[in-house]
Figure 1 (cartoon, rainbow, N blue to C red):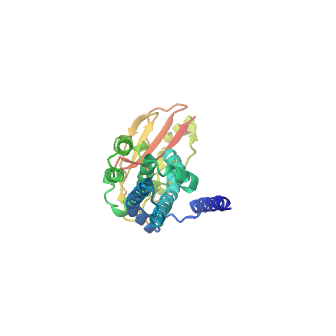
Figure 2 (figure 1 turned 90 degrees about the vertical axis):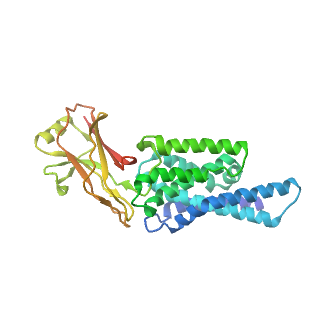
Figure 3 (figure 1 turned 180 degrees about the vertical axis):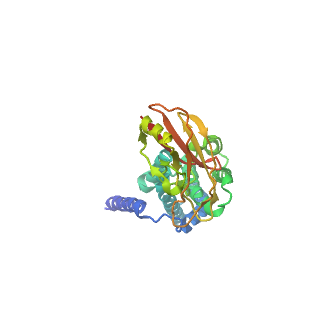
Length: 329
């Protein structure tokens, strides 16, 4: 019976976790719990480690401590709930920013915390605890950074690298612990500081909402007409001949206090055409309304069938926001 009830409760908690993934409130006005969990995460993992170590020492001496077991169970449960909340909160922001690899990693880690059998099996593994702690801090820190320092987005990746270094700081001198910590540190620094911006861990609370190309006759905002992602070379050339411009329209969503200028990188078949920084300064808001921004061009080199026109969007030229493409047929 006990075994049956244990399995039933596991399924109930799994169902509740999946329900929470879809029903949780995630917006710029519900960040208090996320902030508290971010600040408490490292101390909780340290407490979890210390309590687990004490419990192991007691068992090695043939001793049992009901109080220690209760504290160990409580610290595990709190840590599990905190990491679940952070990972659940982050999921849709990977989707809107179309960062599918990071979304996949987050889903896998979340699944290991939702299924109790996996959680109990993996938790004693040092590398798992370090990876879970690191990923949770990256997710929460990436979302909250613009709320804390909206005027210093240029330091975003440096701040994230510092937070990751603190999260992975060795808590004991032990070969396995030091090796796994060093490997994760190295991989994280490469990701945050050395990779091209399009492949780095994203800034989760700033994204471009449905960027697209359009045509414009007088380069005024209200005159932009959307065009399909697949366009014929004849239509492309005819539009330019008729005096229209090709525009990259990029509504940007950002938290209150963010005041930045978007950089657009235009390429045709991988060849850089122009890299303008838009004159208008985006203004974040609490309602997650996209700040409308666009840039238009008239002069293009000859294009041919199968050519790809791409517009990449970034802040500070280091924070990749997204891109849109136009395939000519």
